[in-house]
Image (cartoon, rainbow, N blue to C red; front, top):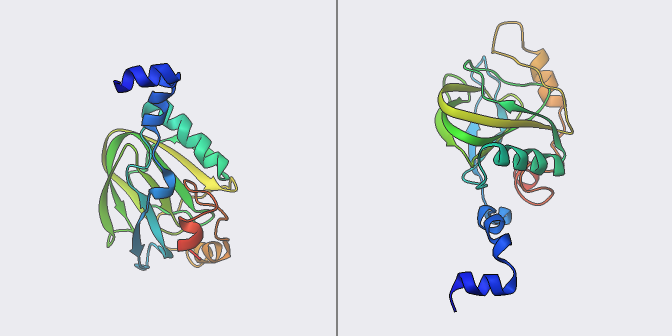
Length: 192
């Protein structure tokens, strides 16, 4: 029996597109990227987590899925946009970025950091203090969110920002959930 006929017979044909677009989140392991304090950008003792090809939906459907997934794991205060074209970091919150369209070359960790290409389907969990900058993008669409809906600040590694930003970062709790994987795995095991 052909697959299409079999699925129609079971009444599952209508569900097939949804199932084909979902990935098994429990099977996705993140890349771990470490960045040291460079004197201007504090970076973090915790690794930035990069989930490659973590979801299959794109455009508005992908953005909506990201917003729901992040909110279900208590990462809220979300927005849709891109990444600033200058080195910056946040001292009052960790951040997650989900790429729902296009691609970008990001410079992570400040001037001495690493250049990484991200594309639709990728999710990046950025510890407070880790620098990030957009070096160039094509049709980039991002959903950003924060654990417990925290408010975020923007710091550029300028004189006078530290030591206050260092104190802010040190006072932040480790989130109780990973924005993609929830209470199991991801940052909940890697950052502890």
